[in-house]
Amino acid sequence: MTRSRTLAFRLAAAASVFAAFYHATAIAMPEFGRLAYPPGYPLWRHIVFVLIDGNLGWLLLRRPIWLIWPYAALTVQAAASHGGAAWMMWRQNGRIDWISIVVVIGLPLVLGLLYVEWRNRRASSNPTTSTDAGGGRITL
Image (cartoon, rainbow, N blue to C red; front, side):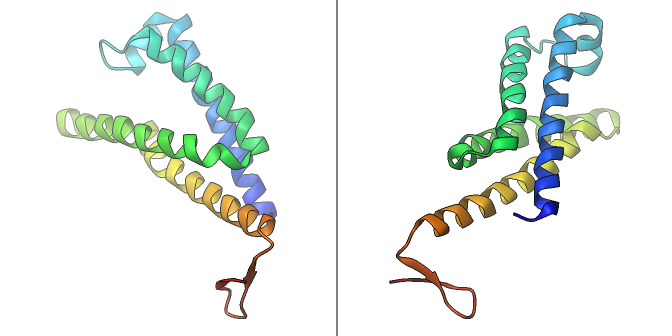
């Protein structure tokens, strides 16, 4: 794996741990939670994302081959949730929700990196697959 990809995964892991602490702070300091999240954001959701984001920070450093599937589901969920929140903030207040913008752009980028790694690992573990001179896969 390239050094830049390793760095990207480390940054993504750090961002995930930051997100876990952000949700934990909203639990520990309700006044912060009221400022940072919309009214009615449930406590159980903070707890779930402390667990998800905290574990994801560790998993992004180890990257088991199966990680792509739950990460893809998280990416879809986060894009819908944060994308909707960013749109509503823009429409109602004319403000940019920078955290949501980072999430909506960052998670798919990391998903792309996970896909490249998943594809490369599958290809290297499949002895009946080879690569032609043009980089295409051929099955023997």
